[in-house]
Length: 216
Image 1 (tube, rainbow, N blue to C red):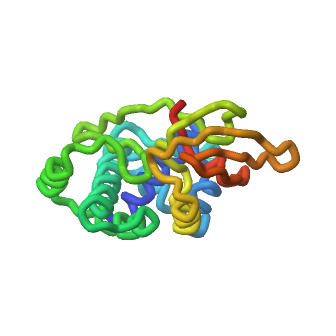
Image 2 (cartoon, rainbow, N blue to C red; image 1 turned 45 degrees about the vertical axis):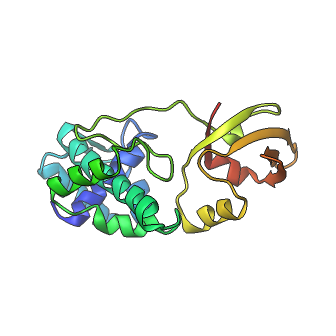
């Protein structure tokens, strides 16, 4: 498998959760920031390798073999992110790009030892579950902050935007994994929320509340 092929499989895995009938080439090319023609060519290549199920105009989905490879890449990526934060003191807005490079290391022994060294973590620094060596993932019940109503209290367990700008914004607001958010009120006009975190009160835009996951 080439780095590019692994990236495509990992991206299809991420997108097919919201597109169970098939991920369109347009959506996939936008996600990967590639040209649609190049995306279609790669999908056909993966289809020829029997890693995906592809139907023109319907989209692409991973088959069992493709999903197994995607989960291995996801596992390595999230383990490396955990290592970078826990052992090298990287901030959570710095780790994605570095882990993108490290996730393609082929040594299974290295990944097994990395997992053991970290104490077999279940979640990465962004709150995403880490697949185990067999590809099993622990599913979490979670809600977006935007789904809560005044009086609800939730514990931050993850985000669905790992861009540096968003993670830096969260750092500026002292919002981290484990932070407890109490919803005080919601502005009818723009759906922004007034929340209490510990002893502080702050306002969060609807864009921000859409990207923060909590456990009630």
